[in-house]
Image (cartoon, chains in turn yellow, green):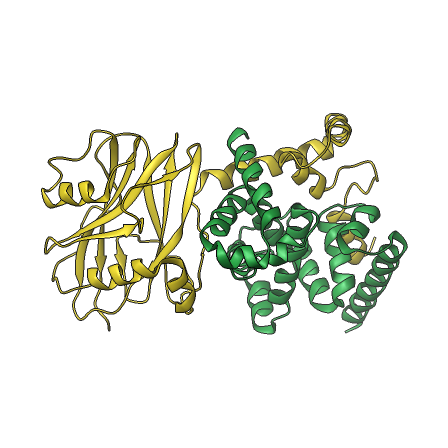
Length: 247
Length: 190
């Protein structure tokens, strides 16, 4: 057999019309099939080794994807108008946060979990659209995209405290924490673009996940008092972020 | 898959409700929908992009690009009758665009040895063959080739996704095979 034919045969080694396609397997896993289709596909997968192996491989792919952090980019870094639409108030907040504090990076990256099992995290997307692996350092022009993982419905907020003691609210824009659905990861529909700063700044980001609605003012007050009076209904995830100066 | 099912329900229900006017007036809502859709359907986009481009890195870029495009133009999905099939087509188009960028294609071919892509039966030779095929064939033939050889679809399924007849699918595949065989023969002669 020629190389050409071997390559074709390798690609489609089981060309039987009864075999389920990848599209069928996707639809089955996504429950996008009716009862008859489901029964027929499941019977075929049970009876055919080739189909079963592909089904298991694709299912494992879904599970791996579910387990990884979300990386959706809601706005391209070079389209500021979209960002303004996403969170006009937040841009102003971000700009205000980028003031003038000289500091060194936190040597211990990652979250400092205060309590609870829920999780707050974010993705840093550079101006060229790349995702930074190091989430402890950002540069002007970078975009921060927020996400929460919660086992149950939670009222959430994101605030920050700079080394100069300045408290900023990144999310939500309203006066109360905002409800997100539990059971998985939620990527917030707002993003913040970091503006230029003359000197680097260090701040702590606080992700609040509360079982009841809490006023933002209460959270701001707690941060002013340096965590001594966080509401008992809230889990807090704290993350250090160093924002470098404009080059 | 319980969590997946729950999110999928939200995604589909809301995606169906997206119209241009809704998207414009309810930016917040449609981004929530797309978040849910990303969680439920992102895996299939990523897998297929890996299969077609043969590169994990390119696949991640395709995933981001596809959902970014949806943020910008959610109405493109709301017009689709089947979300999963629409994502198949959109992923395929984005992959073709990348592969047909000469610079990109050259880099992909050079990277085959080092890139641990998850293509089925992946061998450097087969991956190179796929890249060559997708770079050489006209769009319609290349799409039929991908659906048949990479996605293992039947002619009927390809006809549904491409919106054409089964006979046309058969013709596209025949022409694709003939063209690839011709290219292969020319390469062998050289």
